Length: 113
Length: 113
Image 1: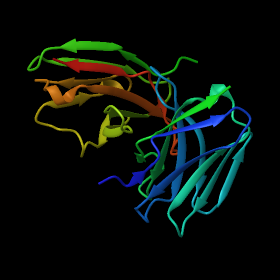
Image 2: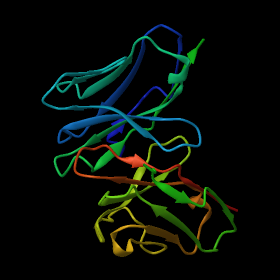
Image 3: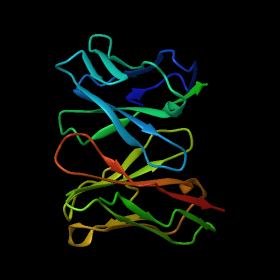
């Protein structure tokens, strides 16, 4: 049973516009959430995270929003750049430890120049 | 600083043959992970080590998969015998502390014919 879901397998956005990637989770014990970015033939790299005590975390062009009541989080990229084209994985961890990660299936973002 | 190193990058074998993957984590990282990533899916944890100890191997198919982390540094993941369904990318990651930020290697892509 997939506990972290990314229902959009792909997303295309014009350069300079906002990219919004969504993620839903089912386990109410999850309390720490992360986004990883993956280029082809490379391993995933950490992008940004958020603790369940917050509803927003911002790092440059990247902002993650958490809605605990809806069990939903989203990643906003503004402005989007062609170099942002990659697969984005949402991940969550439960209270057994922040390193016990459950990953979603990923969303492939394409930023069109 | 060198990242997580994995080898081989690619391996093609026939079913029922054995295969082994090697991982060298980032120096000083006490936690090491092996993940399985099937096509179009997110990474799924196979086993997690804290130093030499396997603290979570609940998802490792122990009838054919084995892993070891001698001296708490390098690790080897073995499959014997390989099955067609084992074709996937095997990712190694390491971390220090409990931040949720895992550092992934480039992965070892296995094709079983």
